[in-house]
Length: 238
Image 1: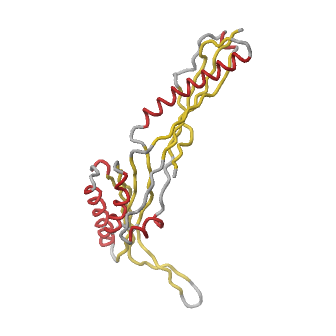
Image 2 (image 1 turned 90 degrees about the horizontal axis):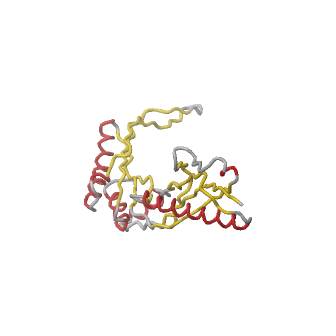
Image 3 (image 1 turned 180 degrees about the vertical axis):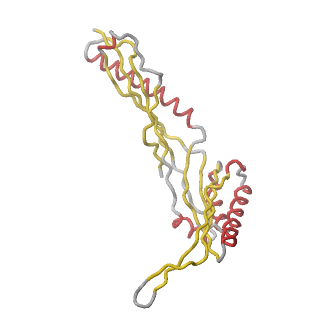
């Protein structure tokens, strides 16, 4: 499985477009430079929780909270620091049931309460992710909202890719200038775009049955494709 960094976040390198020389930049070459690299993710993030139903609001919320407390305890037992364990959502709603009436009429009647409590866990030791999912279900969780992978510090890689993309743009511009018998001049303008992460999710329906049988849930982190693109304009002279 490969997570692709997609989308475009426009980042202006300078507060205003570079203007080396207004007259010189009237004759220019515009190019697009690109760079990409594949990285292994260094953390996994999973949101798990419980959906519970009971006759009273308090009993429903207590049931959901008890299961989530077990999930948090399992995460801490696997070495996850408290800062990487956080509540994602808590909901409490009245539940209803459909009742068929004589004559074909259908009505909704109160039927206790429905609650959910979700916790998000960020795990640096991704080899333990399958164990965490199985233990979460054994603790009472019945919902997995998704598993995603990422980099804790993507800025360093993004900065290096921007430099590589800029060098690629310069190289392309030099080749074009040489092809038309011109000399490449100063940089006129430069803007960059950086990919933003897409994090694929593993559906609960796929994960829960495997874990319910006591087996470690198989999870493959795959790789993350990072990319950067710059648009540059260089002055040219004969």
